[in-house]
Amino acid sequence: MRWNKYTVILGAILLSGCATTTPALEAHSPNFGKAVAQNIAAQRIAPTAKDKADTFIPPNRARQKAAREAYENGTVKEPISVTTTGDE
Image (cartoon, rainbow, N blue to C red):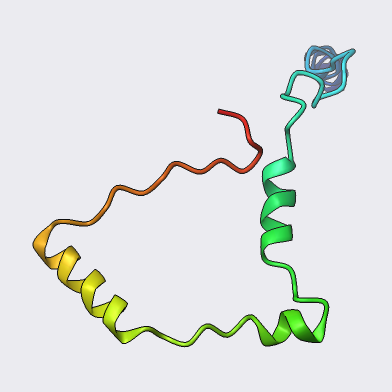
């Protein structure tokens, strides 16, 4: 029984070492979480009938063929770098 008491006390002392006095997210960037908000905004449902009508883009067979040929020839353009929060 004595051994269990010491184990509990030692466990409480060790767990108290994990406690902090500052909030867990205080050390993060002020932009923390903005990427998720940006992704949610990009994937939202179109709210108006006009927006819903503009979501279908018919395929352009000539552009598809040109893209496939550029890929096969190794002449694909380098993509432009994009960020979610405007930070560089």
